[in-house]
Length: 120
Length: 113
Image (tube, rainbow over all chains, first blue to last red; front, side, top):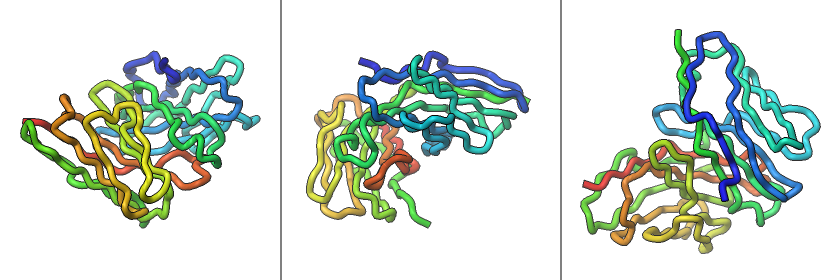
């Protein structure tokens, strides 16, 4: 069963505007981590932001913030003040289990991704 | 700088041939992973290894093989048994804490001709 769902296959956003990328997840494990990665056309995966299941506050990293709604199992990425260089594929991912334990090492799943195109 | 190096960047294979994709890391990470990415799709796990000389199958291991003789290296062989090998292959690694996810290589694009 799909554990990470990204319902937006693609979206256009104007430069300097904010954009929200949706991600919902499904797990029964109380310990988990949520990640967002950016994949430009060159192909490499760039880590953007991390949210642990026990973190009380939403994670922020520069222009990226993660809107974590635990009860709704939602982990949306917000990119503020979009730039042309933000055009890329964005993936939401989840690691089930505690990151420090080896039983989590094989349990890392990705959503299908959202293609973002920033226009001038 | 530490990182993961994948080579080659582009690889062409004739049908029926085995090919090996290289992945080397100098991050001193314990675990290494191979993912396959098809157009418009997310990443699917092929194999992963937590320690040297040990590895486990992921979700789509059929037609692939790996080895982990050194901590730094985790090569992936795409065998002739893999019926649809054309895809983008990403190697990743993580350390024991792993709270910050994976570090990825830049990928190898494999095309069957």
